[in-house]
Image 1 (cartoon, helix red, strand yellow):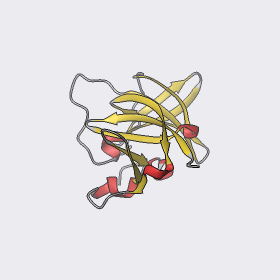
Image 2 (cartoon, helix red, strand yellow):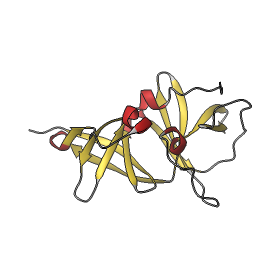
Image 3 (cartoon, helix red, strand yellow):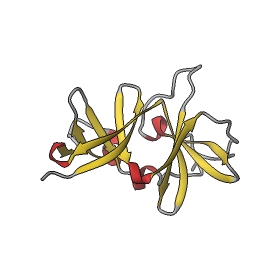
Image 4 (cartoon, one colour):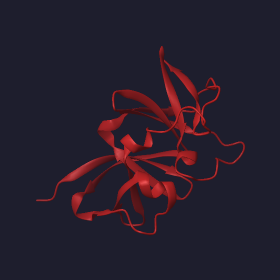
Length: 146
């Protein structure tokens, strides 16, 4: 009997990413943020989420991708990692998928740069690869520029 894993999916450009659904607190549309002086470019700002202040990480920049084109707004995927609640800014939200462990493989050698460090593995879906992020590594970014 094969086991299945539930994954929350989202998109950055042409890439489809997934994280364990148990790590996701909620998803919501773009919300105004307060900028953080001296923060690295990856840190977009702080969001007040029902009285809780959370940091928002621009996942495109974190993965070494170009910024979202002008005029487009991000979506928020709020995750719980290492005792913190953090928002990941993504292009758009996908579905919750159940992926069979039989289709899981380690990250391919073709993934380069920072993305190589942050992508744990892939699931082969019918029409695309689902890149699985290591959420603990994703949220470990420098909050203050050097």
